[in-house]
Image (spheres, rainbow, N blue to C red):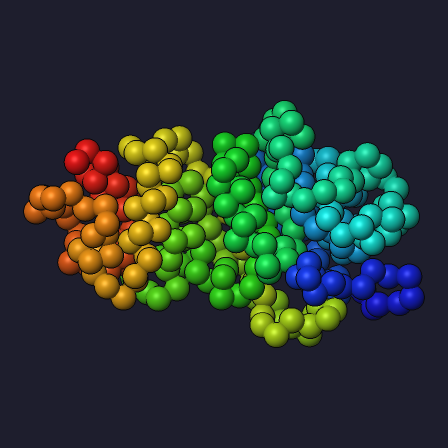
Length: 261
């Protein structure tokens, strides 16, 4: 996809970098392996439709798109009239997804770097309705999300997402495949919701424990968790470790014990 007059200009304040490689676009869409019974797909930030053109011909699902950039809306209406009223002008982060989708739906997109983590927190909020996500992220963010415990990439997002989703780092995308080229490489992640239904502690408390634990990640949990430790914490495990050493299951155990004191 080579830029020409009439195309949409990428806007820095929206974090836009338009993918211009058709093979990569096709590979991203091909990674959308929908679970049985899921027939709706929401594309976030279609821009000039580099993914949309490969999504729309697939009759196994119905494609919706949400776009915040007002310049993109007329472009998409002109080039993809088959979207019709399924092209929504608005901010994904502010949308009421329960009103928009009665049933489960998948998410796909070349996500703007400046809101990519917010998109993930939004997906986490609606995890029971989003069984699959295929998205583009800044490479180091993608590595962090997919990282197992025990290394410096592992962090808050890793722990919060991994109880609910199986996460795959699919492939890296070079800077020169975008207009304008970003300063960093990108990567495609696929997140498939697993069959876990509940945790032994509520999500908000689990999130608090994880965030406090990683707030001072160079310190042991004995020091990092001090604001929420009980007076007697002799029975609390893992306090001599750093947060990056704990799997999400260990964080869950920690959260349960802290909640009961």
